[in-house]
Amino acid sequence: MQKVTVLCVGKLKEKFYLEAAAEYAKRLQRHCRLEILELPEQRLPEDPSPAEIDAALEKEAAAVREKLPKGCALTAMCIEGQLLSSEALSRRLMDCSLAGKSHLVFLIGGSFGLHPSLKAQADLRLSMSPMTFPHHLARVMLLEQLYRAFQIQEGTRYHK
Image (cartoon, rainbow, N blue to C red; front, side, top):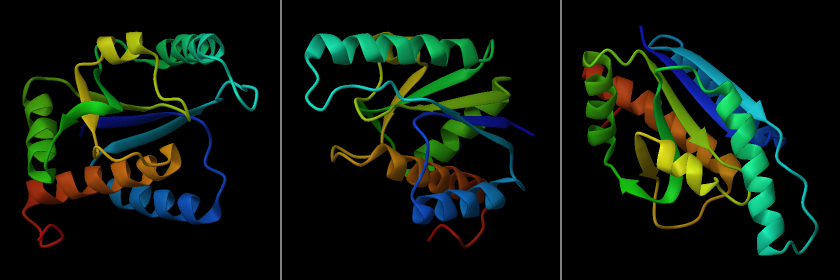
């Protein structure tokens, strides 16, 4: 059984996001060993300068690197990443499994995204859409798509 880690910068606070994430986490337990790790987002002033944003992203990147398991297949969630259909994501998960990549890590940045060095380190940069979503919603969307990907592999009716 694959291990899937969703590594997030920032914590979910809103009840509706927490409930939705918990529902998909529960559903995913049948398909993978899911771990959701939350790292603190760096505090910034109301109107941060580009240098302040970059310094915060560097600190967040250092914290992320401390949590990355050796040999994992790292996917960075970012708007400029590759767009995949649900079917293509399902195939990617299967390909990783067949290639012996038993630990998949999906990285979701905070309000200002991810440091460029993390994106460069990733095996895949994945975009949900060219539209911008709150990073809290992106977590729920990612969990749903992971669940859908496993359902596609099983050939269930969930994916129509």
